[in-house]
Image (cartoon, rainbow, N blue to C red; front, side, top):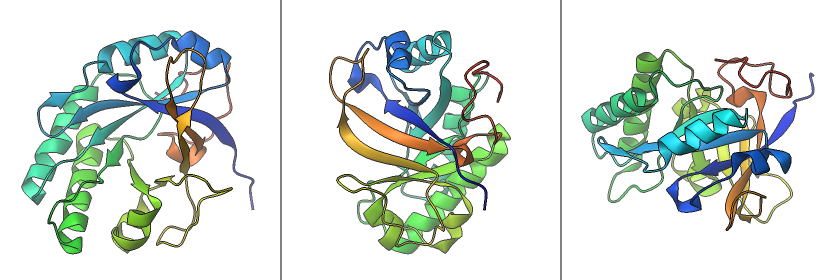
Length: 214
């Protein structure tokens, strides 16, 4: 079995403030997931700046969208909004669905919304997609139909993610929300990513050309 290669990463939004991405890279980070959007109209206020500065630092870049949909049709609308926001951008990470606030939705509704969103993003961008989830929802909420997409799992205070869910393995692991990285004044989510999170696999450890997966 081929050994999986791993890369240190962070995920950011406007909550991290003004980030010095060159310092971030000097501190060993090679992959950054940037919040692009939420709902069907919202764009993160720092999306453009985070993207521009991360590119200047020659980091591998991915984008995630925070889902608020309560119907399948709303999910498709959000997916198209996500695709529109990141259209024309150069990125190496799979576009990611972050769906974690469910309100009164049933498990079946949550999964139907998730599938509709992911399928629409895949179709609108032409890129493979991935799922972000905490360990509890990965185990108890998302069903086997979502396991065809790579899982970026959040679980803190453990030496490795507990994969008691429908996925065979994790592709990204958010291991703390209290990380410290040079170039960011406060705390930040820290992650380990594997090449399964890439749009094109096989270049996760290359530093000479950080834009070889566009």
